[in-house]
Image (tube, rainbow, N blue to C red; front, side, top):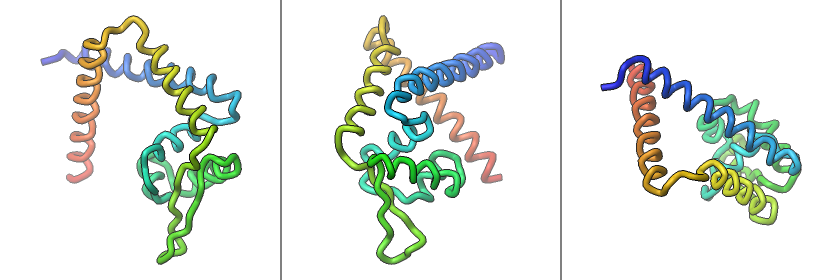
Length: 149
């Protein structure tokens, strides 16, 4: 069992890692005119056939109205496409538009991932990934327990 000091240290380290990774990614995205938030949207849409704007807002933890502005910017840049639902005009499906811009964004992400993992063995990365997944699962479980009470 871990002590409270260790938990604080883990929270501190993961918060710092998140902040620094976000800043590094933002620097790499700036020349493309894409913000970190817009990148997060594109990242969540990667691999999805189609996602509703409402579902994406929930996954990002933002209001649908807030997301709408960012989606419009990405649509104007030819990165995201909105498609109205045939049966409910209030619903928009979002899809990434394949092409050079998405490939460039993906290359930036892979490059930063490689930079982040320099000097770390495959075994260490495997263990780190497993531990981080457990931390996420623990937080998700406690969040769901708190909201169901």
